[in-house]
Image 1 (cartoon, one colour):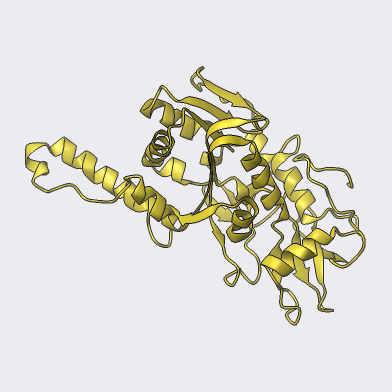
Image 2 (cartoon, rainbow, N blue to C red):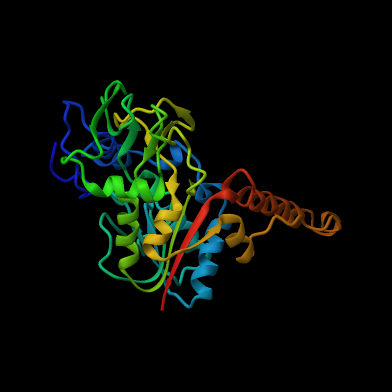
Length: 327
């Protein structure tokens, strides 16, 4: 496999019969029978969108505060965010972008496409999309050379391929590692996920925004705090399972958010900061309300608990928002 992947990204010619991790990952999620062409994310893991409609409230407020009339959801799943936004503000123009076909039951006034729009004026949101963009895995071999990792999609068995300095490997991989994720070559087994594909993917999205705001929301890390063995993981049916790029499960890895942000000139915030600024706070209702309006008090308690989950330290509140504004 030496041609472009199903996401249109170049591959590295493998020195073995096994595909590179990026090739296997791409096929597992986005191939003809890929995970995201068949499965609903909500059936396998929980995101801020599924945790509470207060996330959608924040999206609506962000759009309206900026004077924007359109919301585009990249990696829209089964349209859960757009459905919630529509119920909150039916006047907004909505577009879902997803490799899967239009979900049944989605309101007819919500537009749907399997390809990125050529141009956007509005708020573009990608919630937990970048962590599913396949990337190369690199591991320091016994000889101290960082090498491309290959994998058997059926078994998960890995092998080390070409060193990054080999002529068959794009120089951009080594350049990115040296800039963003330097590996200790004295530590065989040290690993990294090379973020070039994520940087390019988000730059492509941001480049399509003519006027408005582009927001990538994801879990990730910064230089100086990278996971020494990488962060690759899989989820299926609501729990973490063995990592396997066979199409039966989600495959995800944390995002080097500082690299993505610098690529597009984004400002980094925590989800906690952004949601609180947009009015999503875990303030409990006054107990006196329990006497005069017990149902209102219960609704207030539920809203408070949902806001607390979305902004929690050590949880969703630690997610990153990469915000790029174009006027």
